[in-house]
Length: 463
Image 1: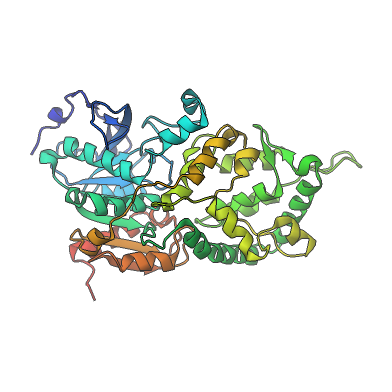
Image 2: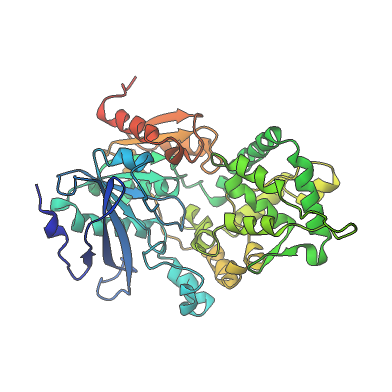
């Protein structure tokens, strides 16, 4: 058994805090000083900070537990902040020492926000800086932490949710020696040479249409309400209405609500109740009809562009290896003969379809928090020399135990593309289910995690 006090000793590139508590959990903060660019000499590279939170059940601070690294979805989002022992964290802490690592640029890991990035100056400087914030360097950070945190620099288990799963497959490709086992939840990425951003969006749009159809079947009264809102926006001066914190809500901006509303549990309900309060009451007869402040504020609250702009800036780059995205989702969207054209849908009496996990160039004009990054976003969309994120030859010869929950109707990670990748990962075990949506890890408590661990530890038979 190691002495926890030895881990708390500070080194030049690792500072460990003291233990503190939330109900039924003990936590400790770790901060690591890492290179921005791992491809050059460490001393020559600029430095950034990466934050990781160590979590154990109360009383297990000094127990010799195996380590589990959790990689959050995104890109561009920090790890959850535990408030109690519940859900998957409670389940995981029964047998693991959990490490919640804020991926570089998020949370407490040199967070890249509209205010912090204002220090970078030009669009060219921003684009150049952001190229170091993809999965390849997230894996480099994880390895940097592992060899300093895990006793004897042993391998650890990695749990990757959504984009965190993409990062985990990058980990399998380039640093499998650091992995004891890998658990993927809704996070099998497209890896083949033909898995360009265009191929991804061509595969994903039909599922988005399907989710829209399911939504309106659940809440048929919303067909007319959404059309009324779109019509009002289109007929307003400038083609939209101002948002509380700046920017402009247009019909196409309204459709972005599908990003969260259509793909996770309770999203349908939340979207419906939001549109339920779309309009201000007419208190004085003859007053002009207007969209309520409640609705406009709820719209802004649902999006995280003001706090997590990396999502919009880097989203399409997660599909790029040696090629540019050139605003792929925007180009592919218009291939569907106007099915996502909100104004045309109103004129033709069709339901207005929301979009899914897509980022469009006009968002950097209509959303205030993103407007200052418009030029940088275009540079990133045009960038061609993105390095590889996966090594198919290594995946074909994988020796690391891998178990994956694949959600059959996942709106964010296409089922067909996920299955194509799974066929390339030697030894992977799949749990294919339509019982959960993309948010199954969060929604299923410990059940999803328990099922995956059972597949790897022998409790779930192979056949």
